Image (tube, rainbow, N blue to C red; front, side, top):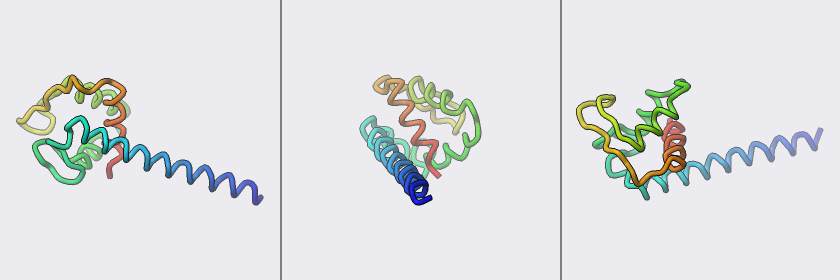
Length: 106
């Protein structure tokens, strides 16, 4: 019984560490790729707040793939008249990391 509790504790601790690492990696990547020039986590700047993006796409099965494409190729009309420009400096793996981080914002 003690051993099982220790294993559960280790799994939970690892999960929290992984979430923290993803949060740091996501924010660091967003800063490095200049995403924060137009977006913020909690407030609208030029583009929507990341929390608003997460809320809008919550529960949508295809959200990650849709947003990865939008990060790389850009898009318009979803959040108003100002288009999101293409980001050729962001590769697909980086876009996936960014999108997972954005979708994790609450």
